[in-house]
Image (cartoon, rainbow, N blue to C red; front, side):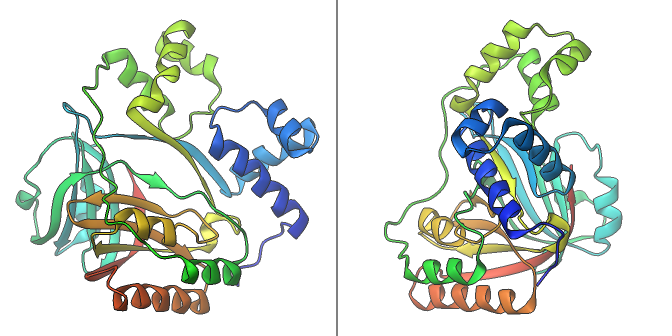
Amino acid sequence: MAVTNVTEKKLFEYYKIYEQIYEDPLIPLYQISKNTKVSRSTVSRYVAKMYELSILQGPFISMKPAENYHQYAYFLLVNDPFTVYRRLKGFPGVVSKSLTAGSWNLLVICDRLMDLSVLSGVRKCILQGVKGVTHLSKVGGLNWDESIQRMKAVVPEEKCTLYEESSELLWKEEEWVLFDQFKYNIREKTMPVLKKVDIRIEQYQKWVSQLHEVSLVQPAFFPLQQKNYFFFDFLFQSDYHKGLANVLGMLPSTSYFFSVGRYLFARLSFVDKKQRDDLYSLICALQEKGYITQWCQAMVISSGD
């Protein structure tokens, strides 16, 4: 088990703060203090420490697909993934990329349809398609064993995809500028950013008030600090996307999900071999029960934009 310098009591208070931010990404500190019964100065100090330790990240803005806006996911097997990964930095149209090891070794998310087979060294495209909005799980507890037991008791009942498409996205240049500034943390101090990009507070307020219509705004929570986790990406062929996301999202650290056609992508994390074995056992049980048709995986080595 990973060791941190955070006491159990403090970690529980961190978790209570995270819960408040998950429910309301822009909730002010004084309201968190009121809701959690933790003093305002302590909340302020704890939030700063959570960011410093990468226990709390975001809230991130994840765009929903729209009639006139889509993102595309490419799961590639390439000869020299590190070189290609490095060369993709700043590449037009690339939203994010992940260097991995496994059934694929490069995951690329683009905001336009691209022919990535022309990239040097691409041997095979494992899967490509329109990407749904990224869902970040709401962490429901801090204890691994208790979480696994709850997961075993849940049945992914209805057949349902995670993919949902909103109506036309009507953003102009200023809205995209705001998105670029706040996409990794909507709680960034507002006025310095607006001054830097020369956008009025009224325009920002209007943009924020309509964000829920075109995006999901969600924080990530890693109680043992992100650096102590191993991250694995999974592709599940399944008709039970929402059910699987509900079950696998019960892990005591943030999980990431999105749909690509019949496949559900899941980025899951654990800290040691015992947790890895528990997770794989659960996935195999879900496959035996028919909730997963087939699956493949890759270990995350590096991820960024």
